[in-house]
Image (cartoon, rainbow over all chains, first blue to last red; front, side, top):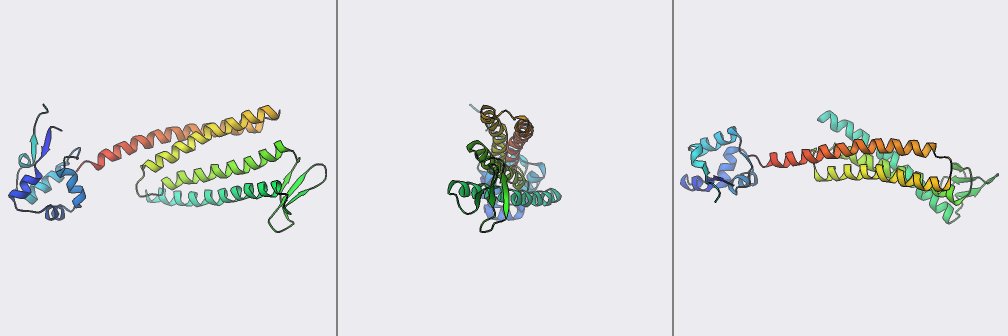
Length: 69
Length: 171
């Protein structure tokens, strides 16, 4: 999929565990892993807002466009 | 959806309450006739009676003691037991927390397939052996109409399941 989720990178930068982020977002770790592993088909704006607020970052830090070869 | 679940629960138990006596009656009649148990008795003018178990109180009276009549009687009881059981399974689909499930789609598919095929098969066999077809034909048409309804419900539920699975993958 051309849209890459760089959540692991931001978590490492902020020295935060997935579990902590999941608790802040009020979702399960299984649900968060759908996003981390690239299985998600989309993301809601309010979810993106919550992630950016939790990680103190911009949407562009989480989402990257990489065209398919 | 809470009201739907409540209604579905009531209808589920109602159809089970109807299905179980039908199925038990079919099994009891089959055993009574095949093994000529005390629950079976021939009465005047070629008729027969099936009694409640361990009693002499009749609950089924047969017009003629012939293989065709007896087979149809047992088949009717058994098949309507299965029909109400499957109908109960449809209502069970509406009881669950999630409406669109693979099991729900399977139950609808089984229901429409049975409603299309079984009455038609029954009618064909009946036509070969009897000339009184109006009742069976009416029932076959009614069940076919029900089958059509269930067919479209299955298509809607299948689409709903696909959309739900996609929605589950939206964070």
